[in-house]
Image 1: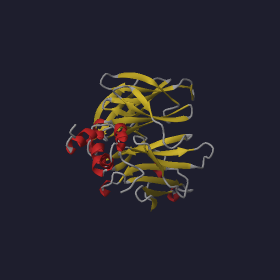
Image 2 (image 1 turned 135 degrees about the vertical axis):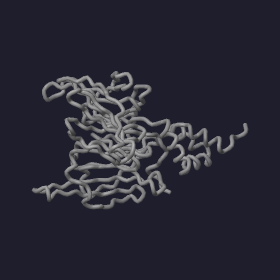
Image 3 (image 1 turned 45 degrees about the horizontal axis):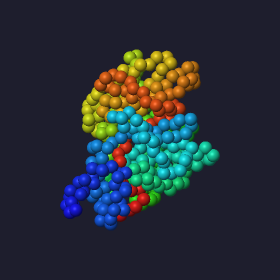
Image 4 (image 1 turned 180 degrees about the horizontal axis):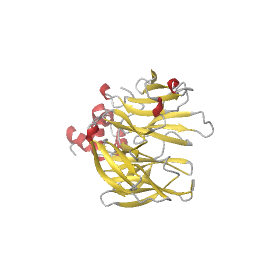
Length: 341
């Protein structure tokens, strides 16, 4: 059988998921060279960003951390097996170019903590070299787009120090570069008063952003993220027991904030629903909790809210609490965290 022209072969391969492409590495040397090339990796990432974006749901169940890919059209969760062993607990810092950053904690040694960079699609993982100090405070994850390398990932660690007087408060920020495999100190460059008031990060137009948890005009503001990378936030109005979902159309322009829709959340003195994030446009994931006094008496569950139909739909995911649950936007990619040019 005559072979396809190269451009048609490339076009076919670009349409395949990473799991299939990983099997083709052994077909021949030319395919292996193609699939590992910077051109193909970028082209496949660009296409996946349009058609294969999913939400990764990280949650704790019976004090054990789990993570799975949530596909809204199926209302199902496909569990991922971590490539970094079986830690007692970990948190998802964020994702970029199909790569996740995780912070790992160990029960047997509370003073020991690690930072991992992981591409679950190709089962590659590496541990970030230890800082001179304990991993604490604020961790952020992104990449430097001007270098021209999709794997030029950066990890930011910000530690806070509090003196007896507010004037004595300070912070110390350090940046890790994956390509140089080294840390760099950038000093006291972050407001120390924000350390306990930030939500999960959002990467928006190559900026790492946070949405502070705060009460503004009687509204509790919490972060939501849409999978098309547009920064969103939800504001809760205690009097009406609903959430308003807003989006920033232009970065840094206050006037560009636009309300997308309002979610009708059924809450009372016992039932509370806390937003995790937007799984797709018009669908928001919540953690439904039942409070009796100061303790949970019934299990908490993840529920899906369809804003177009104003309806909740449950699927069988039980979580320890809303505080330990995160929804992180993710896209499959061939970006390596091990090899270098």
